[in-house]
Length: 607
Image (cartoon, rainbow, N blue to C red; front, side, top):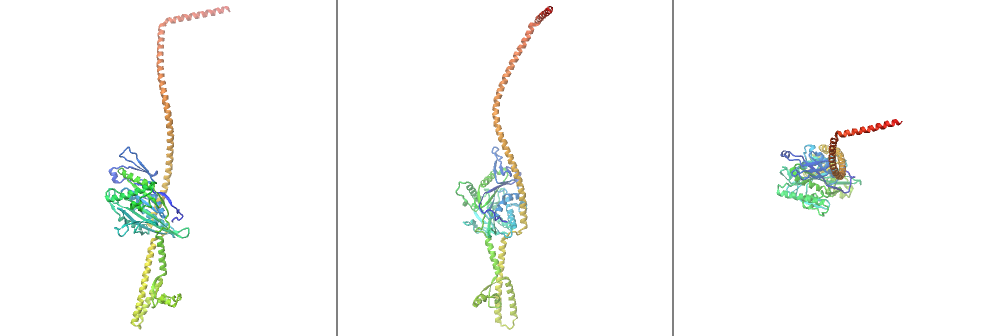
């Protein structure tokens, strides 16, 4: 159900930029090319290595979302395109760009493999998403879905759905509706299959050509636009119409193989780059939208009234280094563009209200019936019953010769009455031939008028049916296949939300670990400073220690010399004194001993 309680004010938001890297293809693997691109989906970074120059450091870019080689189509849609389509269903304008070198997977991202539900790209998934949303809306909501498809080839605009493919269309601008394409064909779509068929018709008319990377490379820019109008009662009790436009843009990228094409493609892409630069640079007073048809048509998508997402596709191989860096730089600038999207309520170019009024008028006409010429003849009184009561007698007679509205039921009665009168006329045998012919002519005239009225009634019915088919009633089972795809998208979205929750948890844990690492690095830095100071002191102490050790060594050597001298002296002393010294010592000891004994005896006698 459309959210009429949503913000009516202007929403300012940057262009969302996502990058998708495809896997190495078989040719690149066989040739032996290296994987130069590293994708970190948790941090949202793309790192590109240049193996040729070992001294050149890797280049890292950060984006809103990044997808690695193993990414799934449904995840890409739910994370990137779903928010844009949801906004369009609320009445905003939305734009989805596909940008990148040819052969990097733009077509797979945007279109995918339509026969396999899990491999469908952004475009078919958006179709299923839109009509799945309509099928869930309430019954009093009315929708009108229209599509158009154009290409810009050599700076000329061509209607891919038009009958005359040689006709070149003009880009116009009006104050009330902005930039538009004059005489651009648009078709109403009642279900996702209708949109798919219309796009297939237009796709066959695109200008394509072979390049080294891709045999069917698009040689033109193409814009497929889905306009969704819906009406519902607002808080004031009145019907309000909102109109959202979804622009799906496939940008051609020049490979320099065709001079004229390359010049024109480079002109538009160069102008697009200049527009992006002017929008990002706050000092620029002029944005060169008018320098190319592409930028003029995308004026709202870049810096205007739109919610925009750019999907940049890159190749992983090392030989694509320059193109990959160029694409990433281009996308890196685009993410700084700020748009101001607002809900388009009761826009001047909305057709839903006009269609609803036409439907009401047609129903009223059908209820009132068709006008049939009156006559003086038989049966005319039944058509003009009560005319005399409404006015003067003469006026009633004049009106009987005029026209009167007759209901479908009355037409059936009149047809039966004409048949009865014809049979009665043929049964009258007494009537003159001239009078009979006159009566036959009168019956034929009445029958012709009746047939004409019935044909007009049938035309009105067909017109009403056509208009009613264009206006889709919310809550109607539009197409089981579209609902299945929408269900698959929702299931994938729920699974993705769970994965995102886990990824967010991992991101938080990673941030905590990162913070811990930073804390450790800070501590390590302070410890390093402390260690440096202590190292200086240690070196000084070490020098002193070495000097002390050297001094000790010298002292030890000197002491050893002294000890050696003492030992030599002792040995010499022993050799010189010899036994004589011992005998003298013994004699001295004997003398001392004798004196001591004499003194002891003397002392005993005195006692």
